[in-house]
Length: 335
Length: 85
Image: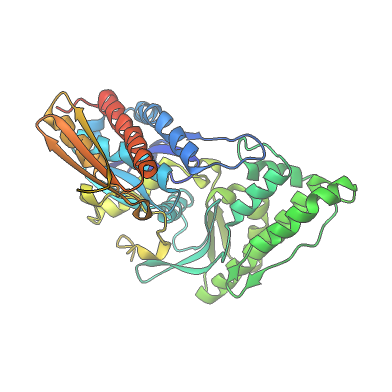
């Protein structure tokens, strides 16, 4: 029996989760929500994490009904992410690890998403589409690495959605992407947008500038409604993602596709991906907002696997790094 | 003679164990490279001693402020989830 606690705070979500041998005992989370039209800035986000970390930690222990002595390993997000929020979360992890005399595992955030997705869905060796506010990658496992087949060459898909939500002044509660998804259901008239797939990679910044520039005029003239634009944006960017995922699956002869990351709980993206998968006689694996969106349990799960392979870090190596690519990690726990 | 601006903090703890824990947590993160701030930490008995040096007083202030934010978080964490046995 191994119990791991995971600390996640790389973006605007602060999550602390406890996992015992693949069972989630608790996974509380608190999200920093900004007013409509505003994004979250590193300084304020870090302050949010510092203010909520101890209450969330308390909740995680209480819900799991365990005492600190029962914990075997403390896991935290090393990166990638925003510097100050990462450090604020790591500071709490380092301090409790010393207080409770536990080893520390430094976890790559992307690996956390992948391992959590595999645990929850039971997917064995899937082609992974990792889509969130800060990352957009198509990943496939080979020879002890999660290899990046394709990725965004500028902004992440979630960043594109978030920033368009700001143009429309949509609420950031529970998330801008969720509100775009709901509004898009009422969309009827399609606006053609730049479709930018470059080989295995995608680009969203030109598309965003295009729609940011035209949206206010098109809405004012009554040619398109905000719902029409949300629908058009979703259709275009999700089609791009499905295209590169399908190409990666064809390359790897993969019969499984797993969607992880915050944008991954978008039902419409899941529907489009499922359709593609079915046409290839493949299976789609996806999770809901509890595990798709950043959370502490995913860091605990990846950390637990690493801990079992002896991949702990001495205290003075438990720094954070804003850039930390998925393929930098040696995946010792998989064959 | 140096024209650097200097700030020294002496933070007393109830015991050396707690001072060591704070040192362990806070000495890990490096100052941002382009900030031009040099920071060093050490523990003497029950006191955590922090020394800051910077050319610009503005960057010195930013570093000290940010350090205080993290220090407060460490103290609160020890209070709520300690004290060490």
